[in-house]
Image (cartoon, rainbow, N blue to C red; front, side):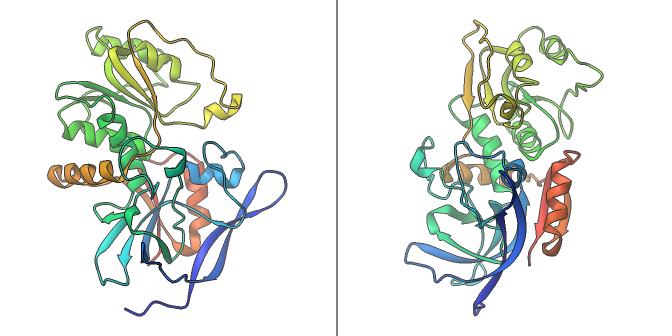
Length: 313
């Protein structure tokens, strides 16, 4: 396959104040170095981070320069090697172990062709690697779940839905829908933490995939079990206080862990579980490449269940 000379890509251009505008631009395709692969991108899936960046509310722990190529999740093929299909790990330099400042660079993939280090790509198993490996890191990281454990996931976003699927496949009992044992509607049950304690016989859950932020963190810690883990994923509510989040930690020996996506090793292990359990990613809606801005607005509306995807090729 002969690679074209140019590629279409969405970049974030600076506008007034802190905000950026999503602009479709043309760029020359870089020649891959010895440690890189050239990839033809087939599809891009969005994370809430991708909405925060143009809104000017995304700065920690990563910063970005104007005209950066948008998005971080993709599925495609290595054009230099033929039709082997790949996914990009969100942090391409994070190969194993815990994340560090030097391994926290996120991929830029909202283009028809892209180039990055070969250590950051894996054989393709699904089109939404960031959400999936984030959920896997929550459940299989420093405090791995066991069969029979209780897991609480919040909302219907990509991380929550993948967390549900991975937990069920691992033999855990999940409070949610789509294969979950229990479903609690926070709108009709505002004291959902008390309901969680009731469902678990007063024990609490071993894992909370915490995606809500300030509006849910206190309740999450009130319903986690002794020695359990609250995995902090959500960030939107934290912005209201500039990341200064005042809360107490209950005296139940709980683990409070901020999740930084996941390593390539975790990504590969997760793909084995996805393959063995025949897990199918939940995709809410697919947009054409020319309508990427509409995909961003759909995600910003927060009414999706699963992932929002942009079809590139």
